[in-house]
Every structure is written in C-alpha cells, then in structure tokens.
Image 1 (cartoon, helix red, strand yellow):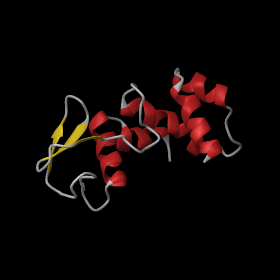
Image 2: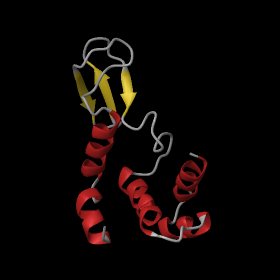
Image 3: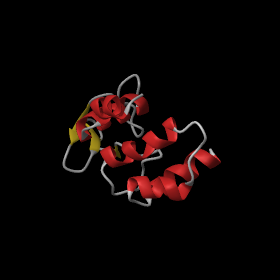
Length: 113
C-alpha cells in the first residue's frame, strides 16, 4: 500500500477510531460489565459508555495502542513502516521515522507477539 493510500484510509483521528472500534468489537460494542450493547461515545476522552450500567471502556483498552497519550493517527503512522519494509526495520529506525517512543513499543509488541 502506498503512503498516500494509507493516509487516505487512516489519515484522520476519526478514521483511526472507526478502525479500532470495528476491529475491537466486530459485532458491535458489548459492555464487559453487564453485556449490554447500548452505548454512547464520550468523544472528549475517547471512551465508550454503557447506557445501562454506565461502565466506561477506553476505545484502545486491550489493544497495542492502550496506555499511550499519542493520537491514534500517529500510532497508525508508526505501523506503516513495519508493514512495508520487506527486510525488516530496526527499533531505532522506527523511532526515528515516527519521532517518538511509540515506535519502540510497537516494535516490541510485534517482535515479542
């Protein structure tokens, strides 16, 4: 996939949020606390809140994007070089290309499985 195509699909926060939501809950949101499907988005904090029990779940909870403060757009951009380099990429090269420690965390996640 070319970089312009990649940016067309994952270039905005909203596009990245939608991808994470679809991958995390392919059959729609399911509250881990009560099992309800009814929910609302708290966009100011990237949370989903169950309408029945009010349990809040981070959009990135349980994913490799959890517990980082970088925007999702930057995290997706860090994945791009990993998916494109046929000879592999070092952790330091990934860090240089993204300009952040996020690249190192992604590298460790992929390398260690």
